[in-house]
Length: 186
Image 1: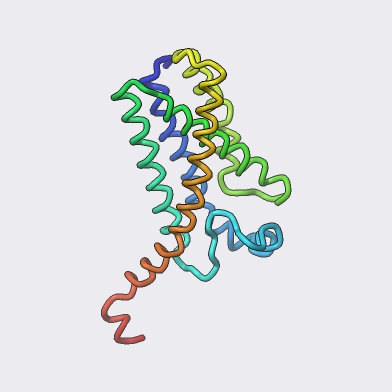
Image 2 (image 1 turned 135 degrees about the horizontal axis):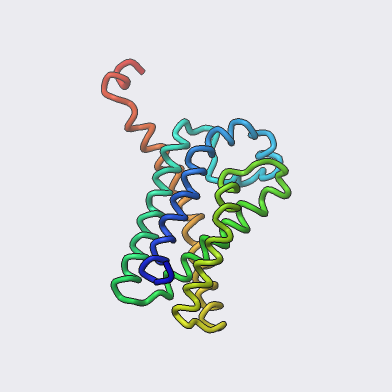
């Protein structure tokens, strides 16, 4: 359990378990707290929520799948090439995302936010895995700070890009759902 070949796979595992909570809860949470969400985030609701779309969960799941594939590839290539800098930055980014996006967002919102339960559950294990990796890889403070910047940059670029993608994906799913029989009747 103290080897990088084990620790590296915790990135996609923790990410996916965390995002299962989001996949299950986002749509129903959005419906339950619509007024509170609108007043807390009037311009940009979280999770790419769009009340016009009837395809929230499938669309959100596609974005999660893309992230899961990305984190799995990062983990795979880290193991193959025995270079863990990108992995460390990505895992640090996921951990910071769980802290700052989910846990701290609950404070002004004053209600449950999807992902907060798994964020709390996985906070200590994530910190432990990052600490263990630092010890095994002998990363110094400068390397960790560089990886931190990389992780933050990945999060800042990937999340908004995936949220932007959700609108067109939802439209495509709506179009796909119209079978030839539905088009004739409409």
